[in-house]
Amino acid sequence: MTETRPTRPPLDDELALALPMLQELVPRTGPDTLAQVRAILAGLAPETPKPDLTAGGTVLVDELTVPGPEGAPGLSMTVLRPTGGVAPAPVIYHIHGGGMVAGTRHMALDAFVPYVRDLGAVVTSIEYRLAPEHPYPAAVEDCYAGLCWLAENAASVGADPARVMIAGASAGGGLAAATALIARDRGFPALTHQILLSPMLDDRLETPSSRMLASEGLWDSSESEFGWTSLLGERRGAAHVSPYAAPARATDLAALPRTFIDVGSVDGFRDEALIYAMRLSQAGVPVDCHLWDGGFHAFYLIAPQAALSQAAVAARDEFLRRALSA
Image (cartoon, rainbow, N blue to C red; front, side, top):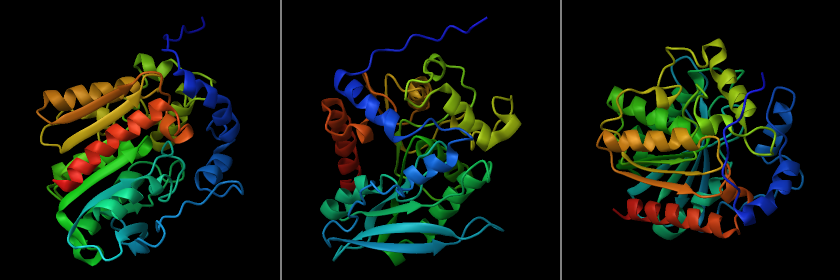
């Protein structure tokens, strides 16, 4: 019997016009296309423009190698600092997306440049090991090791170890949430905020939104299954998956940092993001939660000029500027 897929909301009209471009730009992610997807997300395609992370010379860009987890290789970290900035500055620890299987530390990093240029913040972005070559717990332990290095060596990059926030989108949002759980449970370092953008949180794929999309040019249920299976193997969907792999599995969300979480209504991660936001709030965590009607996964990157994209970015920007100025 063919499964009846849950109904999905309609796409925003402007975003719907961008869907053919998305379908042409990035193939569906799977074992046969993984190398191609990785090349595209790494910006290796000839037509991919390279953003100016220096913002015309107002931002210093340093490429560092920091210690990885015990017994693991060193980690590449990009650090953005204001030229002539006043230390110690608040710092955003960024974790890139890519479905747990693709992406690099430079992906979407340009979105954080204005906070360095305008507010004097420091931004760091970590290169973690990817699945399936490096299954759980490689990625999240890399992210935690990089965060610990940053907190312990904040002065070397002009950062304030008491004003560290963590941010990520998609798989990066899931890893940011997981890293925040580890930091809380291991008692170091303290985080002021977590910014979770369309986060990938739940390996079980049981919610209506996780099953509502298939072969539409959007990140769909088969791609989510591929990403989670690459990370967890046969453990995906099993009873005892660690919350450090899939933060939706956490039973205790108390004492986590103030959270910004957003997601589109046509995003396969919609329900898990909203449930996580609700559970954080029920645990006493301050939460700013936004559901963007008609938005698909990463819509603000694919169609940045759309009115919905501009509204989503403005809401996020307002939260970040308040957090960095606190």
